[in-house]
Structure formats: C-alpha cells, structure tokens
Amino acid sequence: MDRYAKQRLFLGREADGALRTKRVAVLGLGALGSVIAPWLARAGVGHLTLIDRDLVEASNLQRQLLYGEADLGRPKAEVAAQRLAEANSTIDLRPVVADLTSGNARELLSGFDLICDGTDNFEARFLINDVAILTGTPWIYAGAIGGEGLVWPLNPPRTPCLRCLLEEPPAGGDVDTCDSAGVLGPAVGVIGSWAALEALKILTGRAPHADLARFDFWEDERQFLSPPRTRCRFCTERITEFLDARWSLKASPLCGLEGVQIRVNPPARLDLDALKTRLELRTRGPWKRAGLMLKGQEGPDEITLFADGRALVHGPMSPERARSWYTEVVGC
Image 1 (cartoon, rainbow, N blue to C red):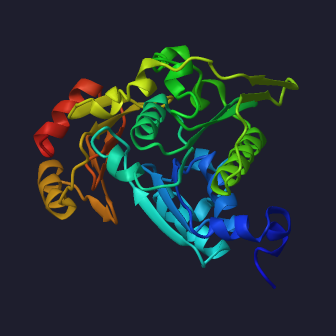
Image 2: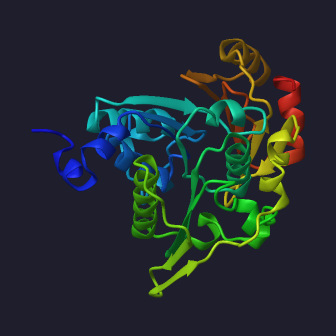
C-alpha cells in the first residue's frame, strides 16, 4: 500500500510530492519536538535535522512521546532519529547533539525550508528569530506550560518577527517554566500537533495561520491575537544582535534542581579520552566514557562532560566554583 495515499487525497499529488524535497530543522526534541518531528517524518518531509543538547531523563517520560525507560541517559537527538527511522526509513534524518549558541546558530540553522521551535527557553528562540531575519527562513514559534500553549508561524520580513511582539527576552523569574508551573502531556500534544499542521501548510505552499493562537485547555479558553501592524527595527534593519553576541563561558544554576549547567561559546571539541585520564588522576576514582559523554564524581558532585564542551554538575557546587573547576580541568 502507498504510504502517503490518504495524505495525497487531501493535499493533492503536487503538494504531497513537494514534501519529499523539503528540509526542516527541529530545534529541541523534548515535549513539543517529540510531537512535531514524528508528524513531519510520517508525512514524508524529505530531510529532518534533529537538534537537542539534552539526555533522556525519567521526568521527561510523562510527556515526551519519543522516549521510553530503556532510553534513559541517552542523547535525545540520537534516540529521536532512531525512533523516526523506524516510522519512516525513506527520509533523511540527521541527529545533532549540540547546544545552540551565537557561535554555531548560523551553521546549525541555515539551509532549511523551515525551522520548528521545540525549545523551552527564550535565548534559543531569539537566536532562531535572528537566523530567520538574516536568511528569510520561516519558523514556527511554539510553547506549552501547565494546561495551555501557543503557536505562531513567523516569516520576517513578510510577517512580523518575534521581536515585533517581544523586544527583549523576559527575565528569568518573570515567566513560568515546566519546573515552576508543571505541564500536562495532552496540552503539549495538541500544541505540537497544531505546530506540525502549520508546518505542513508552509511546506506545501499554503499560507499558515497569521495570528498568534493561544489556548488554555484546562480553563476552556482560546485567543487569536492579531500580529503587530508595524515592524520593529530589528527585522526592518536586519539587526541580529543575539547572533552577534560574544561570550565564552557561562555557569548557571539548574532550573528546579541542585546543580549547575556550564556552557561554552563557540562549542568546543573536547578530547574525552585525554580528559578521562586527567580526571581519574585528579579525583582518584573511575570516570566512564559513553559516546559523546564522560561521567564521574568529584567529592559530592556528579559531573557529566560533553564532547562539545558543555558540563552538568549535579550536587552542591556553586556556579562560581563550577566555573573555577571547569577552567582548572578543561580550560576555556
């Protein structure tokens, strides 16, 4: 039986066939990305680049449909590619385990017909918006928290950009997160499916929904907010200050957990085998190499180093001490 027969009946032969020529980047393979990416894969989008920096954790399994218990501790991008290949082996899938920064965003997000936002932070979304301004690539902003969510297709300068509505990212304490407000899996599922539907419209040449669509499924509310009528100076003058930002090392507390996340910009290429030897001498204990990761213990802190230079510290280590530890062990 023809895999796409039912879809072709609705879309038409030309639009359905066009999907096989399209290239899409899905940034973030968490709750939203694990809904968006399977719909695009099953629809036969010709190429999907799957970008995520994180590992599968037990707390993900309540709402992130691509993963199971056997995947705990594995990179989400690699597991996602494996699951999608099982659903559709005829498309091209490229998993990328990476942290999106100003140093790699141009490289990671250029050359696509569409970018789908499956992230959970505004820093990444403003980087996507800058790439869209620079390259003219359409993208779909999506988010879900608690029992509500929103979807907004954007394609500056033909449409407003994200900064036309929200000039600067909100401060960290000004917005709820999954760790502070929780999230319902079915709400994520509806929002991810809506975003995937808008993606199919764009990829087949149909105009997407123009308004910002917001739903509160728990309170039975819905809003369609018209986009700003005027364009901001960032998309009209092609100002990409988030892409142009330069920083080398950041250490920040983990949201909702005891620990620290260390990020480097641009991403590095660490020699994990050499670091393993160095750290085992330093800590007098074993460190385990597993693919793109190196895990071990220093005092009360459990530390994971990634090949791209990132590190996760689970334990009482402060961000200031984490920065010092990182520069002592890895350098900067």
